[in-house]
Image (cartoon, protein in one colour):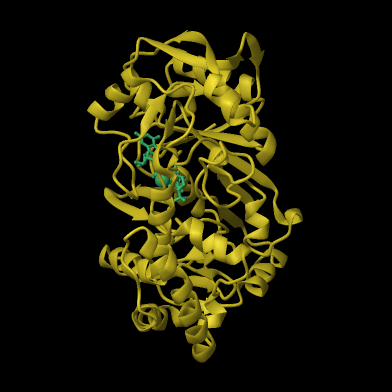
Length: 422
Ligand code: GDP
Ligand code: IMO
Ligand code: MG
Protein backbone atom coordinates (compact mmCIF):
# COMPACT_ATOMS: atom_id res chain seq x y z
CA UNK A 1 0.00 0.00 0.00
CA UNK A 2 1.57 3.34 -1.06
CA UNK A 3 1.37 5.47 2.07
CA UNK A 4 2.03 9.09 2.94
CA UNK A 5 3.27 9.77 6.47
CA UNK A 6 2.40 13.34 7.34
CA UNK A 7 2.66 15.51 10.46
CA UNK A 8 -0.65 16.84 11.81
CA UNK A 9 0.64 19.43 14.28
CA UNK A 10 3.66 21.80 14.28
CA UNK A 11 6.26 19.14 13.44
CA UNK A 12 8.16 16.71 15.68
CA UNK A 13 5.14 14.41 15.97
CA UNK A 14 7.32 11.30 15.64
CA UNK A 15 7.15 10.90 11.84
CA UNK A 16 10.69 9.49 11.66
CA UNK A 17 9.87 6.75 14.12
CA UNK A 18 6.70 5.76 12.22
CA UNK A 19 8.49 5.83 8.84
CA UNK A 20 11.29 3.64 10.20
CA UNK A 21 8.72 1.22 11.64
CA UNK A 22 6.79 0.99 8.35
CA UNK A 23 9.94 0.69 6.23
CA UNK A 24 10.17 -2.98 7.19
CA UNK A 25 7.28 -3.67 4.77
CA UNK A 26 8.16 -0.95 2.23
CA UNK A 27 10.51 -0.96 -0.76
CA UNK A 28 11.12 2.73 -1.37
CA UNK A 29 11.10 5.65 1.10
CA UNK A 30 10.80 9.14 -0.41
CA UNK A 31 11.12 12.67 0.96
CA UNK A 32 9.24 15.27 -1.12
CA UNK A 33 9.69 18.59 0.68
CA UNK A 34 11.57 20.54 3.35
CA UNK A 35 15.28 20.31 3.94
CA UNK A 36 17.59 19.90 6.89
CA UNK A 37 15.25 22.03 9.00
CA UNK A 38 13.70 18.60 9.70
CA UNK A 39 15.04 16.47 12.55
CA UNK A 40 13.67 12.94 12.61
CA UNK A 41 14.69 10.72 15.52
CA UNK A 42 14.78 6.97 15.20
CA UNK A 43 15.80 4.64 18.02
CA UNK A 44 16.46 1.10 16.88
CA UNK A 45 18.19 -1.70 18.77
CA UNK A 46 19.26 0.77 21.46
CA UNK A 47 21.00 3.13 19.02
CA UNK A 48 19.71 6.68 18.41
CA UNK A 49 19.86 8.18 14.91
CA UNK A 50 18.90 11.76 14.08
CA UNK A 51 18.09 12.30 10.40
CA UNK A 52 17.72 15.69 8.73
CA UNK A 53 17.81 15.14 4.96
CA UNK A 54 18.23 11.39 4.79
CA UNK A 55 14.89 9.57 4.59
CA UNK A 56 14.15 7.54 7.72
CA UNK A 57 14.20 4.30 5.73
CA UNK A 58 17.99 4.59 5.51
CA UNK A 59 18.58 2.33 8.54
CA UNK A 60 17.18 -0.73 6.75
CA UNK A 61 19.26 -2.73 4.27
CA UNK A 62 17.99 -3.33 0.75
CA UNK A 63 15.56 -0.40 0.70
CA UNK A 64 15.81 2.51 -1.73
CA UNK A 65 15.73 6.00 -0.21
CA UNK A 66 14.97 8.98 -2.42
CA UNK A 67 15.43 12.69 -1.83
CA UNK A 68 12.81 14.01 -4.25
CA UNK A 69 12.68 17.10 -6.45
CA UNK A 70 10.66 19.10 -3.89
CA UNK A 71 13.36 18.93 -1.21
CA UNK A 72 15.92 21.72 -0.83
CA UNK A 73 19.30 20.08 -0.35
CA UNK A 74 22.22 21.62 1.53
CA UNK A 75 25.07 19.61 0.01
CA UNK A 76 27.48 20.49 2.82
CA UNK A 77 24.96 19.54 5.52
CA UNK A 78 24.06 16.33 3.72
CA UNK A 79 27.72 15.25 3.51
CA UNK A 80 28.14 15.82 7.25
CA UNK A 81 24.96 13.84 7.93
CA UNK A 82 25.98 10.92 5.70
CA UNK A 83 29.37 10.76 7.44
CA UNK A 84 27.70 10.80 10.87
CA UNK A 85 25.19 8.07 10.04
CA UNK A 86 27.87 5.97 8.31
CA UNK A 87 29.93 6.44 11.48
CA UNK A 88 27.06 4.71 13.31
CA UNK A 89 27.52 1.68 11.08
CA UNK A 90 24.89 2.34 8.39
CA UNK A 91 26.14 1.98 4.81
CA UNK A 92 24.88 4.63 2.38
CA UNK A 93 25.90 3.66 -1.16
CA UNK A 94 24.59 5.18 -4.42
CA UNK A 95 22.19 2.25 -4.92
CA UNK A 96 20.58 2.96 -1.52
CA UNK A 97 20.31 6.76 -1.64
CA UNK A 98 19.13 8.63 -4.74
CA UNK A 99 19.00 12.43 -4.96
CA UNK A 100 16.77 14.10 -7.54
CA UNK A 101 18.62 16.13 -10.16
CA UNK A 102 15.70 18.58 -9.93
CA UNK A 103 16.13 19.23 -6.18
CA UNK A 104 17.15 22.81 -5.40
CA UNK A 105 20.45 23.53 -3.68
CA UNK A 106 20.75 25.39 -0.37
CA UNK A 107 23.90 27.51 -0.72
CA UNK A 108 25.97 28.80 2.22
CA UNK A 109 24.62 32.34 1.84
CA UNK A 110 21.01 31.14 2.16
CA UNK A 111 21.65 30.53 5.87
CA UNK A 112 22.88 34.09 6.37
CA UNK A 113 19.91 35.44 4.40
CA UNK A 114 17.70 33.45 6.77
CA UNK A 115 19.42 35.19 9.71
CA UNK A 116 19.08 38.61 8.02
CA UNK A 117 15.36 38.14 7.52
CA UNK A 118 14.91 37.15 11.16
CA UNK A 119 16.80 40.25 12.31
CA UNK A 120 14.65 42.46 10.09
CA UNK A 121 11.47 40.98 11.57
CA UNK A 122 12.49 41.92 15.13
CA UNK A 123 9.85 40.81 17.63
CA UNK A 124 7.80 39.34 14.76
CA UNK A 125 10.58 36.88 13.89
CA UNK A 126 9.53 33.38 12.86
CA UNK A 127 12.10 31.52 14.96
CA UNK A 128 13.41 29.56 11.97
CA UNK A 129 15.94 26.77 12.20
CA UNK A 130 18.38 29.09 10.33
CA UNK A 131 19.12 26.36 7.81
CA UNK A 132 18.45 28.67 4.85
CA UNK A 133 15.23 26.89 3.92
CA UNK A 134 13.04 29.95 3.31
CA UNK A 135 15.65 31.78 1.18
CA UNK A 136 16.36 28.63 -0.87
CA UNK A 137 12.64 28.16 -1.64
CA UNK A 138 12.45 31.93 -2.37
CA UNK A 139 15.17 31.57 -4.99
CA UNK A 140 13.37 28.54 -6.44
CA UNK A 141 10.09 30.45 -6.83
CA UNK A 142 11.94 33.58 -7.93
CA UNK A 143 13.61 31.48 -10.64
CA UNK A 144 17.15 32.32 -9.58
CA UNK A 145 17.94 29.08 -7.73
CA UNK A 146 20.37 26.32 -8.64
CA UNK A 147 19.30 22.70 -8.97
CA UNK A 148 21.45 19.62 -8.47
CA UNK A 149 21.45 19.15 -12.28
CA UNK A 150 22.94 22.63 -12.66
CA UNK A 151 25.92 21.59 -10.56
CA UNK A 152 26.69 19.00 -13.26
CA UNK A 153 27.37 21.97 -15.56
CA UNK A 154 30.09 23.66 -13.52
CA UNK A 155 30.73 26.76 -15.69
CA UNK A 156 26.99 27.56 -15.71
CA UNK A 157 26.69 27.02 -11.93
CA UNK A 158 29.76 29.14 -11.23
CA UNK A 159 28.40 32.07 -13.25
CA UNK A 160 25.08 31.83 -11.42
CA UNK A 161 26.80 31.74 -8.01
CA UNK A 162 28.92 34.79 -8.91
CA UNK A 163 25.79 36.76 -9.85
CA UNK A 164 23.76 35.70 -6.85
CA UNK A 165 26.60 36.22 -4.33
CA UNK A 166 26.94 39.86 -5.41
CA UNK A 167 23.18 40.42 -4.88
CA UNK A 168 23.14 38.63 -1.54
CA UNK A 169 26.17 40.54 -0.19
CA UNK A 170 24.30 43.82 -0.61
CA UNK A 171 21.59 42.54 1.71
CA UNK A 172 23.99 41.03 4.26
CA UNK A 173 26.02 44.25 4.50
CA UNK A 174 22.88 46.08 5.61
CA UNK A 175 22.60 43.80 8.63
CA UNK A 176 26.34 43.69 9.42
CA UNK A 177 26.31 39.98 8.68
CA UNK A 178 29.31 38.16 7.17
CA UNK A 179 29.50 38.49 3.38
CA UNK A 180 30.72 35.83 0.96
CA UNK A 181 33.24 35.57 -1.83
CA UNK A 182 31.88 33.68 -4.81
CA UNK A 183 35.11 31.64 -4.85
CA UNK A 184 34.49 30.34 -1.32
CA UNK A 185 30.85 29.48 -2.09
CA UNK A 186 31.92 27.64 -5.25
CA UNK A 187 34.74 25.78 -3.49
CA UNK A 188 32.62 24.60 -0.54
CA UNK A 189 29.63 23.68 -2.67
CA UNK A 190 31.56 21.70 -5.25
CA UNK A 191 33.66 19.86 -2.67
CA UNK A 192 30.42 18.58 -1.12
CA UNK A 193 28.81 17.99 -4.50
CA UNK A 194 31.67 15.71 -5.62
CA UNK A 195 30.85 13.44 -2.66
CA UNK A 196 27.16 13.42 -3.63
CA UNK A 197 27.55 13.19 -7.42
CA UNK A 198 27.15 9.36 -7.62
CA UNK A 199 23.75 9.68 -5.89
CA UNK A 200 22.34 12.38 -8.18
CA UNK A 201 20.01 11.10 -10.86
CA UNK A 202 16.64 11.53 -12.52
CA UNK A 203 14.58 9.93 -9.75
CA UNK A 204 11.22 10.24 -11.52
CA UNK A 205 11.53 7.22 -13.85
CA UNK A 206 12.97 5.18 -10.96
CA UNK A 207 9.90 5.96 -8.84
CA UNK A 208 7.48 5.26 -11.69
CA UNK A 209 9.17 1.92 -12.36
CA UNK A 210 8.78 0.99 -8.69
CA UNK A 211 5.12 2.09 -8.77
CA UNK A 212 4.38 0.09 -11.94
CA UNK A 213 6.10 -2.94 -10.39
CA UNK A 214 3.65 -2.59 -7.45
CA UNK A 215 6.43 -2.02 -4.94
CA UNK A 216 5.46 -0.45 -1.63
CA UNK A 217 6.14 3.28 -1.58
CA UNK A 218 6.41 5.24 1.65
CA UNK A 219 6.33 9.05 1.44
CA UNK A 220 7.99 10.72 4.43
CA UNK A 221 6.63 14.16 5.28
CA UNK A 222 8.72 16.74 7.09
CA UNK A 223 7.36 19.46 9.43
CA UNK A 224 3.60 19.40 10.01
CA UNK A 225 0.26 20.73 8.75
CA UNK A 226 0.28 23.85 10.93
CA UNK A 227 3.68 24.73 9.45
CA UNK A 228 2.40 24.29 5.88
CA UNK A 229 2.86 27.40 3.73
CA UNK A 230 -0.86 27.34 2.77
CA UNK A 231 -2.64 25.68 5.69
CA UNK A 232 -0.42 26.62 8.61
CA UNK A 233 -0.36 29.51 11.07
CA UNK A 234 0.95 31.90 8.41
CA UNK A 235 3.42 33.65 8.53
CA UNK A 236 4.74 31.45 11.38
CA UNK A 237 5.23 28.50 9.04
CA UNK A 238 7.91 26.89 6.93
CA UNK A 239 8.28 27.51 3.20
CA UNK A 240 6.91 24.31 1.66
CA UNK A 241 3.68 22.32 1.40
CA UNK A 242 4.17 19.92 4.26
CA UNK A 243 0.75 18.33 3.72
CA UNK A 244 0.03 15.19 1.68
CA UNK A 245 -0.05 17.10 -1.62
CA UNK A 246 3.64 17.88 -1.22
CA UNK A 247 4.29 14.16 -1.61
CA UNK A 248 3.22 14.26 -5.23
CA UNK A 249 4.53 17.63 -6.42
CA UNK A 250 7.74 16.89 -4.55
CA UNK A 251 8.40 13.47 -6.05
CA UNK A 252 6.89 13.32 -9.54
CA UNK A 253 4.52 10.53 -8.52
CA UNK A 254 0.90 11.46 -9.25
CA UNK A 255 -1.92 11.70 -6.66
CA UNK A 256 -3.33 8.44 -8.04
CA UNK A 257 -0.24 6.63 -6.68
CA UNK A 258 -1.27 7.38 -3.08
CA UNK A 259 -3.44 4.75 -1.40
CA UNK A 260 -3.29 5.71 2.28
CA UNK A 261 -2.38 8.71 4.43
CA UNK A 262 -1.17 8.16 7.98
CA UNK A 263 -1.37 11.34 10.02
CA UNK A 264 1.09 11.45 12.90
CA UNK A 265 0.30 13.42 16.05
CA UNK A 266 1.45 13.42 19.63
CA UNK A 267 -1.02 12.62 22.40
CA UNK A 268 -0.47 16.27 23.38
CA UNK A 269 0.81 19.23 21.31
CA UNK A 270 4.26 20.77 20.91
CA UNK A 271 5.67 23.66 18.96
CA UNK A 272 9.10 25.30 18.47
CA UNK A 273 9.60 28.76 17.01
CA UNK A 274 7.17 31.68 17.23
CA UNK A 275 3.47 31.96 16.49
CA UNK A 276 0.09 31.12 17.98
CA UNK A 277 -0.30 28.11 20.27
CA UNK A 278 -3.75 28.27 21.90
CA UNK A 279 -3.38 25.14 24.05
CA UNK A 280 0.21 25.90 25.16
CA UNK A 281 0.52 25.17 28.88
CA UNK A 282 3.43 26.07 31.12
CA UNK A 283 2.66 23.37 33.66
CA UNK A 284 2.67 20.62 31.04
CA UNK A 285 5.82 22.06 29.43
CA UNK A 286 7.63 22.03 32.75
CA UNK A 287 6.43 18.52 33.53
CA UNK A 288 7.62 17.11 30.18
CA UNK A 289 10.92 19.02 30.22
CA UNK A 290 11.62 17.69 33.71
CA UNK A 291 11.24 14.20 32.26
CA UNK A 292 13.98 15.14 29.75
CA UNK A 293 11.48 15.24 26.91
CA UNK A 294 10.72 17.74 24.17
CA UNK A 295 14.04 19.23 23.23
CA UNK A 296 14.40 19.79 19.45
CA UNK A 297 16.34 17.29 17.32
CA UNK A 298 17.69 19.99 14.96
CA UNK A 299 18.40 23.00 17.17
CA UNK A 300 18.18 21.57 20.71
CA UNK A 301 15.59 24.25 21.60
CA UNK A 302 13.06 23.36 24.30
CA UNK A 303 9.70 22.80 22.61
CA UNK A 304 6.64 24.54 24.01
CA UNK A 305 4.10 21.94 25.15
CA UNK A 306 0.34 22.06 25.46
CA UNK A 307 -2.85 20.04 25.56
CA UNK A 308 -4.18 18.03 22.67
CA UNK A 309 -5.83 20.40 20.19
CA UNK A 310 -8.50 18.67 18.10
CA UNK A 311 -9.45 21.90 16.31
CA UNK A 312 -6.08 21.69 14.61
CA UNK A 313 -6.20 17.93 14.20
CA UNK A 314 -9.68 17.95 12.62
CA UNK A 315 -8.48 20.49 10.06
CA UNK A 316 -5.25 18.55 9.48
CA UNK A 317 -7.17 15.30 8.89
CA UNK A 318 -9.34 17.12 6.34
CA UNK A 319 -6.61 18.73 4.27
CA UNK A 320 -4.39 15.64 4.30
CA UNK A 321 -7.19 13.11 3.70
CA UNK A 322 -5.99 11.09 6.67
CA UNK A 323 -7.02 7.43 6.53
CA UNK A 324 -5.39 6.47 9.84
CA UNK A 325 -3.87 8.21 12.85
CA UNK A 326 -0.54 7.36 14.46
CA UNK A 327 -0.69 8.80 17.98
CA UNK A 328 2.79 8.95 19.53
CA UNK A 329 4.07 9.78 23.00
CA UNK A 330 1.00 8.41 24.76
CA UNK A 331 3.46 7.38 27.50
CA UNK A 332 4.27 11.07 28.06
CA UNK A 333 0.90 11.43 29.81
CA UNK A 334 1.22 8.26 31.91
CA UNK A 335 1.40 10.03 35.26
CA UNK A 336 -1.06 12.87 34.72
CA UNK A 337 -4.18 12.94 36.90
CA UNK A 338 -6.52 14.77 34.55
CA UNK A 339 -6.10 15.36 30.83
CA UNK A 340 -7.55 18.21 28.82
CA UNK A 341 -8.62 18.05 25.19
CA UNK A 342 -9.40 21.21 23.25
CA UNK A 343 -12.63 20.65 21.32
CA UNK A 344 -13.26 24.17 19.97
CA UNK A 345 -11.86 27.71 19.95
CA UNK A 346 -13.81 30.49 21.54
CA UNK A 347 -13.22 33.63 19.47
CA UNK A 348 -15.11 36.62 20.86
CA UNK A 349 -17.80 34.40 22.38
CA UNK A 350 -18.41 32.19 19.33
CA UNK A 351 -17.23 28.58 19.23
CA UNK A 352 -15.28 27.42 16.17
CA UNK A 353 -14.37 23.83 15.40
CA UNK A 354 -11.89 24.74 12.65
CA UNK A 355 -8.90 27.11 12.91
CA UNK A 356 -9.13 30.69 11.62
CA UNK A 357 -7.02 32.17 8.81
CA UNK A 358 -6.29 35.63 10.12
CA UNK A 359 -3.63 36.50 12.65
CA UNK A 360 -5.78 38.51 15.02
CA UNK A 361 -8.37 35.73 15.38
CA UNK A 362 -5.55 33.32 16.21
CA UNK A 363 -4.38 35.69 18.91
CA UNK A 364 -7.89 35.90 20.41
CA UNK A 365 -8.66 32.14 20.16
CA UNK A 366 -9.30 30.65 23.62
CA UNK A 367 -9.38 26.87 23.88
CA UNK A 368 -12.62 25.23 25.01
CA UNK A 369 -11.65 22.12 26.95
CA UNK A 370 -13.22 18.91 28.01
CA UNK A 371 -11.46 16.79 30.63
CA UNK A 372 -10.79 13.08 30.77
CA UNK A 373 -9.33 11.10 33.66
CA UNK A 374 -5.69 10.05 33.29
CA UNK A 375 -4.62 6.39 33.48
CA UNK A 376 -1.81 6.79 36.05
CA UNK A 377 -0.10 3.68 34.77
CA UNK A 378 3.10 2.93 32.85
CA UNK A 379 2.30 2.13 29.22
CA UNK A 380 5.88 1.75 27.94
CA UNK A 381 5.91 -2.05 28.22
CA UNK A 382 2.64 -2.56 26.32
CA UNK A 383 3.17 -4.62 23.18
CA UNK A 384 -0.43 -4.65 21.96
CA UNK A 385 -3.16 -2.04 21.73
CA UNK A 386 -5.47 -4.08 23.94
CA UNK A 387 -2.93 -4.01 26.78
CA UNK A 388 -3.30 -0.22 27.12
CA UNK A 389 -5.12 0.94 30.27
CA UNK A 390 -8.86 1.50 29.75
CA UNK A 391 -8.56 5.27 30.34
CA UNK A 392 -5.81 5.48 27.72
CA UNK A 393 -8.03 3.70 25.23
CA UNK A 394 -10.92 6.01 26.13
CA UNK A 395 -8.65 9.04 25.53
CA UNK A 396 -7.63 7.68 22.11
CA UNK A 397 -11.22 6.85 21.18
CA UNK A 398 -12.30 10.40 22.02
CA UNK A 399 -9.39 11.80 20.00
CA UNK A 400 -10.42 9.63 17.05
CA UNK A 401 -14.09 10.69 17.30
CA UNK A 402 -13.21 14.38 17.43
CA UNK A 403 -10.86 14.10 14.42
CA UNK A 404 -13.14 11.78 12.46
CA UNK A 405 -10.28 9.41 11.67
CA UNK A 406 -9.49 5.92 12.98
CA UNK A 407 -6.47 5.10 15.15
CA UNK A 408 -3.94 3.00 13.20
CA UNK A 409 -0.83 3.10 15.44
CA UNK A 410 0.05 4.15 18.98
CA UNK A 411 3.50 5.07 20.30
CA UNK A 412 4.37 4.18 23.89
CA UNK A 413 8.10 4.93 23.77
CA UNK A 414 10.79 6.18 21.39
CA UNK A 415 12.08 2.74 20.36
CA UNK A 416 11.16 1.07 17.08
CA UNK A 417 9.66 -1.75 19.13
CA UNK A 418 7.39 0.61 21.09
CA UNK A 419 4.86 1.08 18.28
CA UNK A 420 1.52 -0.67 18.65
CA UNK A 421 -0.64 -1.56 15.68
CA UNK A 422 -4.38 -1.12 16.15
P1 GDP B 1 9.68 13.96 13.81
O1 GDP B 1 10.38 15.20 13.43
O2 GDP B 1 8.22 14.02 13.52
O3 GDP B 1 10.31 12.72 13.22
O4 GDP B 1 9.81 13.85 15.39
P2 GDP B 1 11.14 14.13 16.27
O5 GDP B 1 12.04 12.99 16.13
O6 GDP B 1 11.68 15.48 15.99
O7 GDP B 1 10.50 14.25 17.71
C1 GDP B 1 9.78 13.22 18.26
C2 GDP B 1 10.44 12.86 19.59
O8 GDP B 1 9.60 11.96 20.26
C3 GDP B 1 11.76 12.14 19.41
O9 GDP B 1 12.57 12.42 20.51
C4 GDP B 1 11.35 10.67 19.39
O10 GDP B 1 12.39 9.79 19.80
C5 GDP B 1 10.26 10.70 20.40
N1 GDP B 1 9.18 9.71 20.21
C6 GDP B 1 8.52 9.35 19.09
N2 GDP B 1 7.48 8.53 19.41
C7 GDP B 1 7.52 8.39 20.75
C8 GDP B 1 6.69 7.71 21.70
O11 GDP B 1 5.70 7.08 21.34
N3 GDP B 1 7.03 7.81 23.01
C9 GDP B 1 8.14 8.52 23.43
N4 GDP B 1 8.42 8.54 24.72
N5 GDP B 1 8.91 9.18 22.57
C10 GDP B 1 8.59 9.13 21.26
P1 IMO C 1 10.34 18.02 11.59
O1 IMO C 1 10.38 17.43 10.21
C1 IMO C 1 9.35 21.39 14.16
C2 IMO C 1 9.68 25.37 12.37
C3 IMO C 1 10.72 26.31 12.93
C4 IMO C 1 10.01 27.64 12.71
C5 IMO C 1 9.32 27.44 11.37
C6 IMO C 1 10.10 27.96 10.17
O2 IMO C 1 11.42 17.57 12.48
O3 IMO C 1 8.97 17.87 12.17
P2 IMO C 1 12.25 27.07 8.87
O4 IMO C 1 13.65 26.81 9.34
O5 IMO C 1 11.57 25.88 8.28
O6 IMO C 1 12.14 28.27 7.97
O7 IMO C 1 11.44 27.47 10.22
O8 IMO C 1 9.16 26.04 11.23
N1 IMO C 1 10.19 24.06 11.91
C7 IMO C 1 9.99 22.92 12.57
N2 IMO C 1 9.42 22.68 13.77
N3 IMO C 1 9.78 20.37 13.40
C8 IMO C 1 10.32 20.57 12.18
O9 IMO C 1 10.62 19.57 11.33
C9 IMO C 1 10.48 21.90 11.74
N4 IMO C 1 11.01 22.47 10.62
C10 IMO C 1 10.80 23.78 10.74
O10 IMO C 1 10.95 26.06 14.31
O11 IMO C 1 8.98 27.80 13.66
MG1 MG D 1 11.59 16.68 14.29
